[in-house]
Amino acid sequence: MLFFAANISMLFTEFDFLERFAQASKAGFRAVEVQFPYQYGAGVLAEQLLRHQLSQVLLNLPAGEWSAGDRGIACLPDRVGEFQDGVGRAIEYATALECPRVNCLAGVARAGADHSRLHDTFVENLRFAARELKQRGIALMIEPLNSRDNPGFFIRDSRHAADIIEEVGSDNLHLQFDVYHSHIIDDDVVSALHQNMSHIAHVQIADDPGRHEPGTGSIDFRGVFQALERAKYVGWIGCEYVPSTTTAESLSWLSSI
Image 1 (cartoon, rainbow, N blue to C red):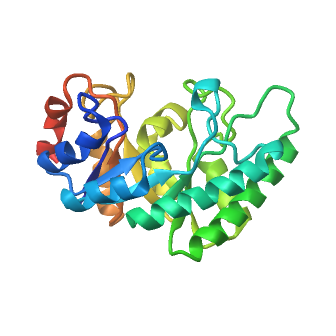
Image 2 (tube, one colour):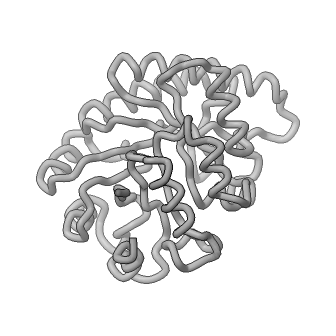
Image 3 (cartoon, rainbow, N blue to C red):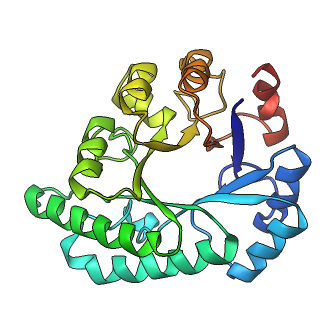
């Protein structure tokens, strides 16, 4: 059996953010993801979760200035202090929301940057974050983002992420496997799933092209879901897509699972 969570940063955007918890519950979800919850008080969000009997299963570490092109700051040597402060902020929210996992976006390798220095910074930042989060019972994730949508993103592909996980050497660092990004990067999503299953602790989905709901693009989601079931995957699958229609109408694919 597969378990799906609503990413309410991308779903139910027809509604004000705090109303999306109710809408997710009404649609039958028992869990939600929020990409960056930091503009709302943790207590306000915890109240929404409790009121609508939802669990929050994922949030991201603070990732810099998104509108300025940041896609995380974890590999950037001149922002280590900011990264460490962000870990503390994420712990505050994850603890208040009883959220068991936090995703770390690596950041963009700027043109001309010293790649080995970026790598060393990323590894040391991950060791710091994995250690701090483990003390609070919170798991740390990393994920590749495709370079078509995110030029220069530091983690190239699933194999690169797995190599970094092994180098960091923490049992509290795992792979967040995003099917949409993997389809663009790895091409054969099912093969990438099989190769990396020992590291995967969270999955996200969207179709390609368009990053819409499953069934609107070229990804073989039947094969993806069958592969997860054969692997006895028991984690959450985050619905992190842009609905091609209203969110409620876009959820029709769930009835065929």
